[in-house]
Image 1 (cartoon, helix red, strand yellow):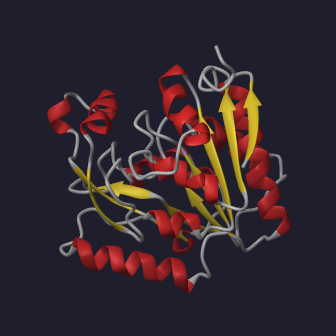
Image 2 (image 1 turned 180 degrees about the vertical axis):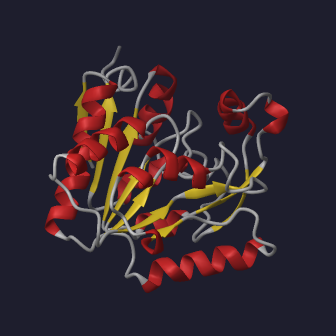
Image 3 (image 1 turned 135 degrees about the vertical axis):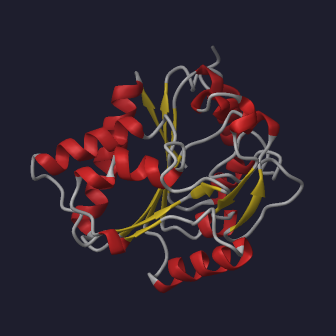
Length: 244
């Protein structure tokens, strides 16, 4: 596991964007796995600038999203479908047919999970997966549990995750309690992982991820086993690693 320390959010975002750009330059038809939330927004802004400056071309790239809330219509501003289109897709030249986001309102969620997993496999798997991390150590919506879920699956969201995500909604009662998420096996089969962490609230999770034992109670800890994983950690998120 390679650890890159960043002085601030901006530096973390630029370093992450540079890695994504390098992947696309090396393999123009690569498959990216992307995350949502506050943490990757700066990376998307940097990638948009790179695209506008003709430094990167997304025309052959395929993108899979890590997860999506169940029960939210795709037009809902809090859905991850909405997030990806309004924070990234509409500003670059990625083809709509090359973007994949789980359908959280599918009539049969189990079938949707199987189909999504099949779509990833049909594209040859993910070349570069970008991850955030929750304060409880979750990656995607793989919450702390007694075992690791392997493939794309339905998740019951942890109370800490619901509490953390309530800031995006009018009230905690509006936060969906279930979601579709890539599983740990799916994530770990990606050829390269890049995990981003920003802010002091992530410090404990980062410490356990890097220094703790590998266990499903800290889902991100499994990254220790990946042969090509990079963590870009802003200094406040790294404070426990640095002994502060």
